[in-house]
Length: 101
Image 1 (spheres, rainbow, N blue to C red):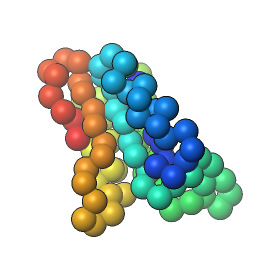
Image 2: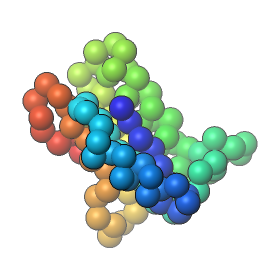
Image 3: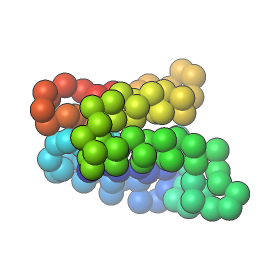
């Protein structure tokens, strides 16, 4: 399961709260400064690139068994992370139990 949620979206707390109840493998990606729709509107918001990259990496890992998926999710998040912000993306791989990001 992967949750992507803007921290300015009024429903952000719902995703954040639900994350702890999910079983691994799981990832949570915070889109800093984003509301609900901008990554999917035309034109896309600035967070559209991280949504696209993390979604493709997630599905490659989940459906194709691509072992690089978790690292690609972390890399896409790093590209989006504003300077000086604490890391807010978490993830676990059920096979090893280590943080993916």
